[in-house]
Amino acid sequence: MKLICYIRALFALPAHIFVTAFSATLVIIAGGVFKSQNYVSQIIHLWACALNFLVNIHVKLRGKENLPEGGCIYLFNHTSGFDITAVHQAIPGHVRFGAKAELFRVPIFGQGMRASGGLEIYRTRRGQVLDLYKNSVARVLKGECFALAAEGTRQSVAGVGERFKAGPFIFAITGQFPIVPVVIRGAFECLPKGKWLPCIDKWRHEIILQVLPPVSTKGLTLEDRQELQRKVQNLMTIAYNRG
Image (cartoon, rainbow, N blue to C red; front, side, top):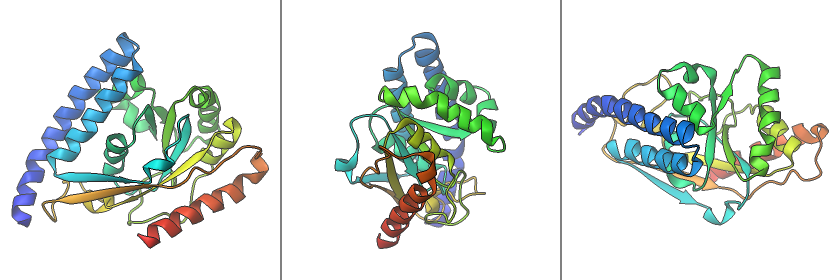
């Protein structure tokens, strides 16, 4: 079976590249030319479903009742590239990711990221990142949601990282909108950091997204940031360990 999975992965990798390039082109047209974020969201959802389907990844959503009606920050533990496709497949609405600036320089894909409204994050330029978050507050208040990695980058082991970045919490406090913790299980096994071939260990994989109750930032100031950060990290760690 592992040999079959390996062969599948060899076919899936170029298929993923083609589907991503094609979808990014559609996003550029929908977002850049027609200025329709509704179409952009639909294209991104179909792109995510296609990439998961090609390697037989099944996505389950728990805690759907915790999804907010308005804008928010979805904070997730980041261990795999399939975190992104799982979120886009399972969580409805206009969800946009913050991604490292290097990805925005990838031909076609980068233009698609910009057309979709993704956040271009320069991880070594903290001040610039904070300015980006500040300038994006109005978008969240209008109903958009951003999905941000709690640890700031992919982790090399499964689970919830030990160190969370301050940026998302400053972002949420500045805009006074909620943080919605999303605990992801199963994505690491699909494609760990440093690997290129997806899902080579078994035929069927399952990724579970557990949406925890929103954590309010109403009335908080930046002086409360560290306490809020510890609270959310503790909630996510406990939820992940409970399974």
